[in-house]
Amino acid sequence: MADRPFHDRDGYIWMDGEFVEWREAKVHVLTHALHYGSAVFEGDRAYDGEIFALDDHSQRLVNSANLLDFKIPYSVEEINKACTDTLSKSGLSSAYVRPFAWRGSEKMGVSAKGNTIHFSVAVWAWGNYFADKMKGIRLTIAKWKRPSPDTIPCKSKAAGLYMICTMSKHAAEADGYDDALMMDYRGYVAECTGAHIFFIRDGELHTPTNDILLDGITYKTIIALAEKRGIKVNRRNIMPDEIKTFTGCFIVGTAAEVTPVREIKGHEMQVGDMILQMAQDYDDLVHRRISL
Image 1 (tube, one colour):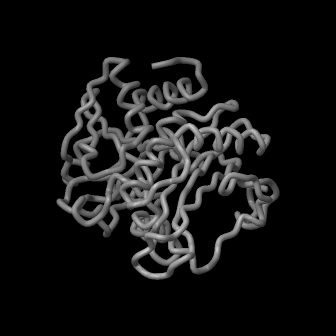
Image 2 (cartoon, rainbow, N blue to C red; image 1 turned 45 degrees about the vertical axis):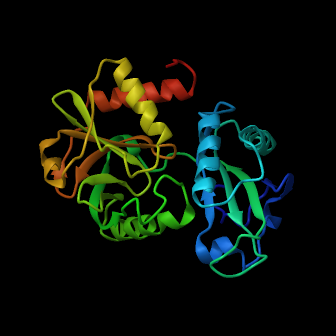
């Protein structure tokens, strides 16, 4: 099933309050979200039958919709239940969970105040985001920059905001890299196409301030795990010419988890003990072997 296209799979998707067969979970081609990007989503992961940080993800989904000027017709608690019910119905214990909401097709045009807000949850098996991730991935530098906060709702996990991420990742893969590192509109280091980034120098972590980036749940978790170990975390603006001064690097996210970086466009990085420890700590936390 993992290799089948997403529109042609067995199973069920939770859609507007009920389960529908996977292949029948459809929307109209004139749905507002398809034409104007008015959709928000989350990426959750389940480990051993439990969705990690579910409440945080569901609250962020609600916040994302509010920033796009629409209200999801379900509470955080109801979204949580839809996610756990869909996970249970899937029969999977470890899986990727995708709750998402979008504007419907009643009106077509920039204005869509009267359109129905739909909500769905899909669950599927998904392993590592990157193949052989613990060997370390290779990054290039994206030509697209993360926009200014007065041009986009940068704290919303909104579908349209990922267009330049898709373009940047495609360009990276075409050049033989795994992903791309993006700068922000000021020229500071921002993030990869779907994950936050950390650098290592002299036993300390350095990471962008996150002021224009999505409020990363894994990002905050890694900071807490590092501080628990007594590792200093420097949250600050980082210029791209600093990259060559760092000895280690890793990216984090729900999909990427903790993934080491072995190269950033010609500058080699070490996959050292600190990165391996952070990866192990995160794995222990999501599998409930340790707690924060």
